[in-house]
Amino acid sequence: MPSRYAQSMSNFVAYLTSLLQLFAVQEDFYDVPTSTLSPVQIREKLADVAVGVIGADKRAAVLDLLAHKTTPNGGVAVTDDLKYLIKYARQNSIHGSPTVLWDGECCRLQVWRSH
Image (cartoon, rainbow, N blue to C red; front, side, top):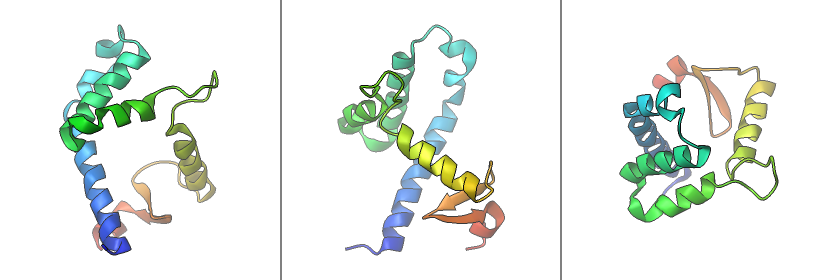
């Protein structure tokens, strides 16, 4: 069984890979290119980007995470996690980058790079 650190680093590498893939096509998600798309269509495009990283067999799982909840203003499956992380960061005086939270610990980009 991999150590917690190894699993954490593996997740981080997967996250970075996904992030770089999204940055490569970010202009496809700017205001003008998405102005005629519905939110559902934009989510489908995001799932297509994710397929390049996680594989086509997991596309449905990504779309499931991005589907609206049953309440009228409930967001999607990741909304509650995102709200929690934002609140947690703000209570620790983190309001933007380059400060990040990694496994619940706050660090500045320069400090993180030195490890």
